[in-house]
Structure formats: structure tokens, C-alpha cells
Length: 265
Image 1 (spheres, rainbow, N blue to C red):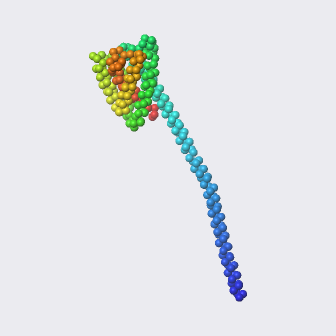
Image 2: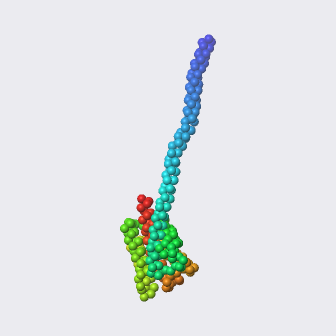
Image 3: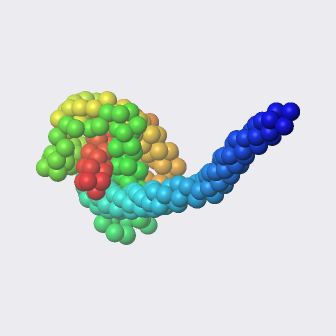
């Protein structure tokens, strides 16, 4: 009997000795897991903050680049508008003087005492129209996805201006049997100007639209007695006047396209 008790006591002691290390290992494992969870929970916000901090410089740089590009675009538009306005006003003065000297257009007596023997409102109106048309041509080209690439150099633009002035000179100085023959001749010259210096569908469509709108405005002004044409044969005006407006629209459109390409580059 004493031997059996000794054996039972030794077995229980041995079992307790074996269970103690197992509990200690379990507690140590739990402590390690709790430490890992705490460290991950502490480190994750810092990573998130670092991520947000890494994005903020790129966002600010994108915003600054967008604002600078918008500012440059507005500056380019202002520069082109000023150049086109000056060109349109100067051409209006010269060509209108030619028409007055040949007695094609007649202004009231109280008006023929201003600059270049013309009405004061002619240069500002023509300059504004030139600015609008010159800005509209490259805008329509980009909207249609058909950039104008035919004869894109200043030498071609200057030749186009020279041909346009020649067409105006012919309308004032050429003498035909009737206005219909002169109108057909100027129409052929205007289409030849478009074919030589433009050849784009947008240029043809805008030229026809400009000729139609400008002819309506001119008829309205003549009807209200602002000025008049000698020997009118087409609703208070000359029948060749739409040809002049068409060739003028093509010429100013080429100037606007060239300015858009040069200033953008």
C-alpha cells in the first residue's frame, strides 16, 4: 500500500509539472498575439497618413498646372483678338476708302468728315467682326477634328490678303456691261481664292455663312438709310457684295488659323 501511494503522488506531481509549462507557453503566445495586434493597429493609421501625405503634393501640382494653362489660354485669346481687330479695322479703312473714291458707296454728308472720309463706326465694327471670324475658324477646325494643314505659312497668308485686296479693287474699278457679269467674275475669283489658300469644308461652310449673314446686315443698314450703294441691283445693294464677304471671311479665317498655330507653339 505505501508503494502505491508513492506512485500515485509521483504521477500527479509529474502531471502537474507537465501542465505548468503548457499554460505558460499559452500565455506567452497570447501576449505575443496581443502585442502584434496593438502594433498593427498603431502602425496602420501612420501608413494611411503617409499615403495621404504622398498624394497631396501631386494634387497641388495638378491644380497649379491647370490654373497656369487656363491663364495662358486666356492670354493667347486676348493677343489673337487684338491682332485680328487691328487687321480688320485697317483693312476696312483702306477698302472702304477705295469704295468711296469710286462712288460705289455713299455716306451722308455729315458723316464724310471723319477719319479717311468714312463713318466712325466702320473700323470698330469690321475689327470686331474680324476678331470673331478669326477666332471662330480654328475653333471649328478643332471641334470637327480636321486641323487645317494646307499651306500653313505666313507667305501664303500674305498672298491671300493680296488676292482679297485685288478682288475688292476689281469690284470698284472694273467696268462690265452689267452687274451680273461683274458678280459672276467676282464669284469665280472668290472661289479661286478659297481653292488656292484654304480647300477645307469648314472654310467653305463658314465663308458661305459669313457672306449670308453680312449681306443681311448690310441690307438692313442700307434700308434704314445709314448709307447706300450706287446702282443697286440686289435688294438695295450690289449683287457682287456677297462675294466680297465670302473672300473676306476666308482671308480673315486664314489669318486667325495662322495666329492660333504660332501663338500656341
